[in-house]
Every structure is written in structure tokens, then in C-alpha cells.
Image (cartoon, rainbow, N blue to C red; front, side, top):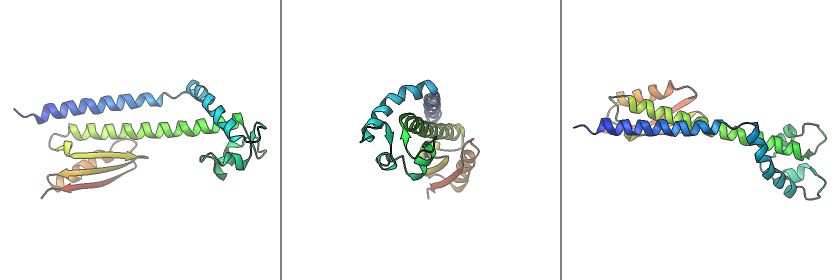
Length: 172
């Protein structure tokens, strides 16, 4: 009996479940943003060293997110200070972008693993897939150059993939 097929099926199911779980992270709506603003209010108050309910550039710079460029973007009323609302709105939006990017990368990785597992003539359990900002890195071992190229071709067709770095090694 060939145990590769049940093993691939089980791994395929796990990859799909992982992808479905990560899709839940995309349900990050306005209600969640509001719930997260209470901790941001505490952060704001900690940064507001003179307690005037406004952050100067110097005060805001203590939060690594608020570089000069980010401060400019957050300062909606252009008064060269950030009030609590400006601070919380900008920081929440920034955190939301990170969550969406991580979830998107996880979905790409899951889809790539599932597609590789579905390919019958490919020993995909020896292939590692990592994704960062849509760039996919394939590593591990394959039996021949055809398998190496096939894996890259499969992954490059997945929606959201910007590039594929194929670091697969052909066993000799």
C-alpha cells in the first residue's frame, strides 16, 4: 500500500484548514478598531509627557511608528501636534494593514502548499514554502530539474504571488 497518498491528503486538509483559520483575521472591521483604541488611549497618555492632550513630534517619536513621514500623515488638522483621535486612528489603521498583510501571506502559503500537494508527480512534502509581502521562497529537495521548475510554475500562478525565489535543490 502506498502511504504517500493518504499522507498527502491529510497534509492537504491541514493546509486548507490553516488557510481558513487565517481568513478569519481578515474580518478586522471598524468595531474591532474601536475596541483596540482603549489600549491606544493608554499609550497616548504615556507618550503625552506634558499632559496637554496633544503629542508633539518629539513625544510621538517615542513610538517607533511615528517617523516624520507618519507624523505628517497622522496630523489631519495640520497643527503640528497629534490629538488622541489622530493618534489612535492612524495607529489602528497601521495595525490593520499589518494584520491584512500577514493574513494574505498565510493564505498564499496555504494555497501554495495545497497546490503542490495536489500535484501527483511531485514529492511536495520535501518542499518548504515561506511568504513575505507576496514574495514566495521555495526551499527543500526535489528529484529532478523538471520537478524544480514545475513547483515554481505552480506557485507563480497563485493569486497574490508577486515573485517566486526557487531555492529548491535537485538531489543527485
